[in-house]
Length: 230
Image (cartoon, rainbow, N blue to C red):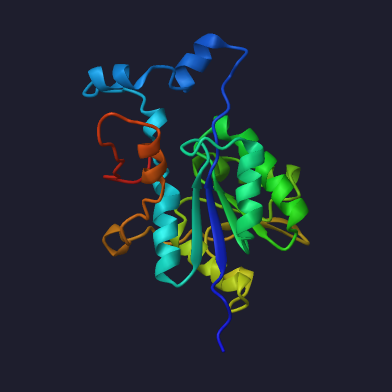
């Protein structure tokens, strides 16, 4: 009889403000009300932090679910989860694989705190970081934080699918593209996966929309992706 589906948690960490620098804090974190957002909704450059979806992990979730994985999508900021609540959610789900997506440095503290604690209470969970910031500092993360098992650089759909296979014992870790990991000889970087054909990807799993709606956004809001890369 087939075993239970692989359990994968995908986390968009909470953003911690720069409380020691009010000017920087205002630039980096949404401090305006929903009413103010809606008044200048068409203004180019408006920051929609309060309604942000983590489309990256939503695409990953849809890809993994298509392969039969059981996936929990957690937007810590959208759901108002502090570190303790996020860790409780992760521990209750008991993932075999936990992925933390880092857009930028504001999310680093929350991600590291949750990943460290999760690894302590569930050492069998494979912890992987990804996203733009993690891709830029992949070797540094692995050299500094032993509770991070690997980092995915660049696009994650192919890498996470192959990583899930490897964790289930179907393939060696060596076959996972875009992976950065430790080895006896130091840090190893696998060749990048071929860029995804976006037309073949499933629509993102928009689990986070429900949490955004509960926060009372007065107009319908959803993110979309028209291209990839900066």
